[in-house]
Length: 463
Image (cartoon, rainbow, N blue to C red; front, side):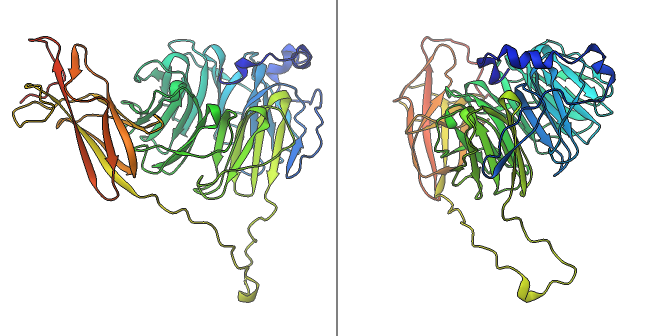
């Protein structure tokens, strides 16, 4: 489980769910059982969910049709914007940790112990699927009904081709908490130890973009093929505009864990997390502001399908709805020029000065710390770029020329770290210090030499 493994739920809450009878499986939507009434909270209005189950995911397809899922197989449905929620049978009592619905009828749920089920009819029936290993599954992402991914504990990552789920290989065994795909080939997976992985070929190959942080990444929201936001433990927010070539931190102003994030467009987004923290941005994350919901419950799920409405889900069956107090004007058939409202000016983020940084890694045969034309470059070494705070700003592999390239790096001072092959050491000061200068390409060099002679080096690029 992602966050809610850290909490012990009240027996009173769980007992409420036990009132569901064994005949529930045959019913598509069950009558409400026990209401949790919470007063309005400013701009956020609490909706009656009829459950006290912890909610881990929420998804609205538009302003009316939505699902919420969570503890003990709970699945809720609304067709009226959440003004009324009804229970939908899943036939399971294990926790649902993720879901994805294509429309009001077709959808997937995933969760504990490899739970993976599909409904073609809004929960009237379910088809169970089996993965290779029954790991807890925390994340789902689909680009179509026959193309999707599921991720979870121990590096578990599976691809669905419309018929079956097959495993995909990723570097290491991180827990995957988040998945986001822009199309059938480009996507991200993120999770423990701050790892963010990227694929450009539908998951056949995954490369590390960031890792090594002590904070987990819990959610990713993408906009288009190249822009995305990632949130996680300690209030971390990362942003990329170039497909993950560089992930830049954004200031959240909070230290609470952020558990989910959702963007309606490239500018407007919501994030939520532990202790009821809620943040919003109207400038793509250049600035994030806190919004007080009046609740102290952990909020683990955000859905923001329209710039005019958003929903949050969390502890004790809490569902909150926000409606834009200043929605865009509704266009008329014959607009009068004088009645057209003048749009309010919005802040345009100023692009940060940036340059390009690259590191040449080679076998330093003469141990002088400088690259000579007769010396061999080293291919396939993992290089990490860190800023002055030792925060990971990017990772990449050296290419056939021995170069690790970091494009569009904000101006500043950095260090470059290499995953040294066994039996090799640096022949120059390490880590390598480098400066990113506006509009320039700065190259640093890293020579490596064996600790003993005749050591086989698989990283050499030879003709």
